[in-house]
Length: 186
Ligand SMILES: [Cu+2]
Image 1: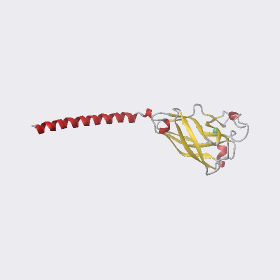
Image 2 (image 1 turned 180 degrees about the vertical axis):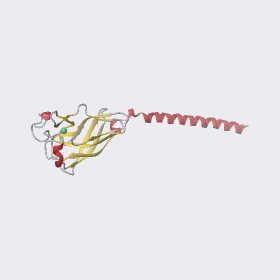
Image 3 (image 1 turned 135 degrees about the horizontal axis):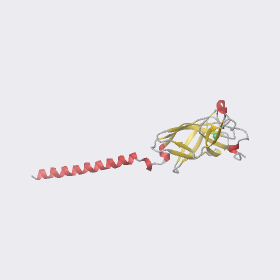
Image 4 (image 1 turned 30 degrees about the vertical axis):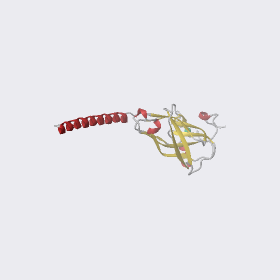
């Protein structure tokens, strides 16, 4: 009789433990599917990043930005110590058959569970007023800031890109007649 009572009690206790464990699992699962608590920087990675080698003036940095979150993520600013300022640019039709680059309103948006490709001729980080030459093989340290205030750092390898220089933002690189950047390089 006594033995049977203990077994029953034990059974009840294990059932309670099992139920509690189930609740814990459910709570964790709910937490895992809601990524609102993780920062933008936690969800973003960059790959294939590089910067175009340049002696002075301006240059640009490129790469693939990946977003693992269920929400769109916005890059609101970028910085490197090697440039006086760093902007986010897009390349658009200038209305007369060519293209021009300009600051991207609101920064870059990386779609939920997606990626954006920063490439010559498309969106890019624009380094203005270079403080020193960026030479091939050198790593340039960047920091980018997201809409929620979190930041991500990465190094981009400098590459020669002279062959295709004219393919992106024609008329806007090198030279002093750049309306979009007037006053930026003194
Ligand atoms: Cu640009």
